[in-house]
Length: 366
Image 1 (tube, helix red, strand yellow):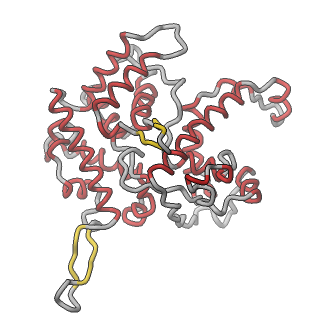
Image 2 (image 1 turned 180 degrees about the vertical axis):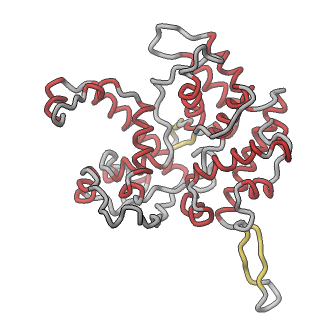
Image 3 (image 1 turned 45 degrees about the vertical axis):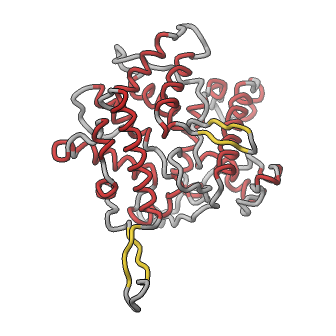
């Protein structure tokens, strides 16, 4: 989430980092974004925030509370470099053979979502008297620090910060009802805290209070749940029939699972330097209830993975080690580290990158 930028102050960098977290969604538009720009959802969001920052001298500070509150969809489309991708042609209602362009399509939906989140968040910040999102988050960090217990394993400061973020900012209110039961994922709010800890936690002295995030749950989106299904960790064949999830990934079977769990063969000499662009396939389009059920399952599955790893005995670790390799590190792995590894391998390993991921359109949460 770091960008190659020079910042006049640490608070300016904090504001940019928090804005990237705020806008870290649009996963349901991965394929159309790739087709339109050659970038996926997260890279598209980074590009937007990068452009908002470097255009400050010309456009005014678009990353300020007022800048967010007043930005228009046309400007967002320009910053995303998709101004020519937000129109679709349709036949004129009364004139034969005449086509008219109208604002429509998946890229226009992304532009509207980004604009709405910026406007809504900017309005909250202006009303609260905050100059930008970073200032609001900084206040939440300081409030969390007041309840920090230095030797505690519970990390109560994260609870305080999370509550402040979720209560105030609608785009952080990542929750839904699944068959009448509340499900709380809070992906972006949790990721905001962890991104801050990663970026500023090693600074000496700390520029502001840093939350301890090793005990946070995973930041559940569509990538991790989908990959865990493809790898056989989440078994949808046993899911409740009322959710309608059992057949959304029909290609998942033992043969494919075994192939994905094998080490990836090294690329051939011919493929090196002549790597064709991966053609991405749209995954199954889910309802809000289905998507939250899968995301919740991934949160629980990763908790079980960590619990299992930490309970492995020395003999079991030695039996699975290769050569002189030690697997003792498995007993120390954290949920955020597991999240980062799954997310990274889903992007970096070519066969995993081609796997379908479920799609939920119209959400500002992931």
